[in-house]
Image (cartoon, rainbow over all chains, first blue to last red; front, top):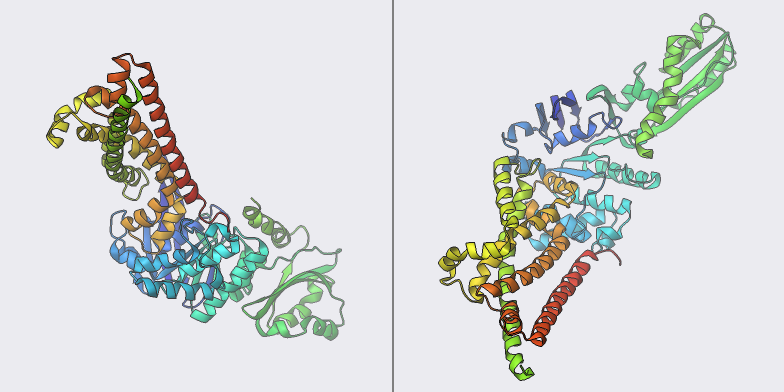
Length: 360
Length: 222
């Protein structure tokens, strides 16, 4: 539905060039919720603005719903009529809502319809329908200043849907909201995705957003996509940074002669009582050092760090058993091993780093 | 002078002042508004970025603003005569008044429009809005309170200019104050004209402030 190839954006400042996006190939399938996550300055904001060409990419192409937008753009800074027509079919919601406070809520939702040239009565009917869809049927006559942040974002979403778009771009839509409001807005986006078959591309710095609604995700660092795939697929990838940040597990071995194993559950295996089977079959005591489980897209997904008595050599068979059950089992090497540091410290620090932006 | 002698002069003077000020204000808004919008749009990073147009417009506006009004008034006599057919009388004065006020108002418009949050422009661009749409539906409505207060300030400046114009063949309260108050040493008449000008300025400022407050209050309280 959305494809970018070799997308690059270079900003010229006085004496140097800053590469905000560096050859990004993104592929968002129809009907999915795709999250791009990264810290501020990673280039994700430039990326989403390049998708509807609010920012002109320096090179590369953007195709949305089979239409090559970069070809429509024309050479000048002004958006061509064709590009503007294409934009009417791409909705966009913003971190700071960007509602006109000189207009009522209803008039704000009518604005894109005015641009589309819809007649007055039809405009009002459609706008009321959209406000009803986002649960604000009674707020039409209010002004944005009278609404809470969550309500403003609902108006923003209603406005973005006015042109019956197939694609919705969400630029940090929940970053200015408190956790509870964030959940309700994400729920709304999820509902719209399912009811209308809306394809959603969102950017965020919050892992929770990805965990809550995304089918697929990409991790962006310094202008590049360093990891991407379906959430399930990422979890199944050994050493995936996104997976360990989505499901951080900590804990270190309680002593020498212990084997620490990270187990990743997804799909069928998540519903089976594997750990107790393991314990019974091999008659070993298993301690759980850390665990993170969640339901992603209706499926149980999670990671668990367990400790088995004895060295690795003694545990080859139980670990083999886990793998036979369709689980991902990775052995975390002892305290001083490089793997241990990577696996044990990153999950504890990374979430703190990734939420820094929210605190600020 | 007795009150019955003064009254027709004051009435005529007030009427002429209002006539000059209101008409020239109308011309100023019609001329200054597009000029101010042009200054913002063609500026660096603007929607119609065009350094040449921006620089030329900026220089013209600055020249207009730096000329003392009394000099402008005299310098424009040929132009005024060409437009109106004469350079004397309240109708003729509309020309220099408007020419003097347009650059001033254009800068006020520029400042007002610059204050509009760029996110709103981006939002309308993302809906497929064209530049005229952005100007009509975002920039001007969002800047409206500042624009109204700019009009108020401009009206008051025009009252000051119009008094000056009175000295060079215009009519109005300024001209009456010079002719009867200053040249005939009629202090009482002078004081009354000054008082009338103060009242005029205060009333305009008051009306302007009320409108701005009403506009700004949109949606602030239920």
